[in-house]
Image (cartoon, rainbow, N blue to C red; front, side, top):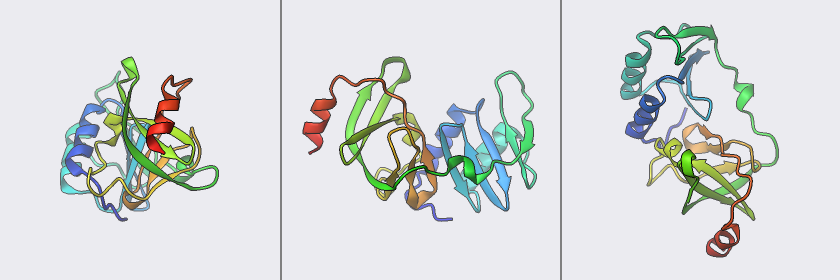
Length: 177
């Protein structure tokens, strides 16, 4: 699998910050890592990522299985591996652009604004640490306002935040036209 535009250090930082909620799955030789808000796939894990995962779990998942860390146990839970269908897009593919705008969502932190045609989508900035600033912010696919955003060049998927209403939406439209 291609992973052009991946920031390995940023991904490891994301994994470490979410270590109590990480899922590491191995299915048909493909490693999938997720915290249920973002997901990335590898045919071969980069060494730094492997070391980070082994420090968290202490073991490899068996083929067809996953390891799941939960806050109430020091021992990872084991289940059947993740299926690809759970992250399939629904709707028509449109290109998305990562804007330079951050939205302060209070307790939820800062949200990066993506634009696709006349729609805006908000993604937690901390979930974009795995995306390289220089190369990974191209070839972004958008399928709808509450659908995952796909970074096609690096097999990375991130879920947007559900935003009830953004007061400065008109300003965003003016600034991004």
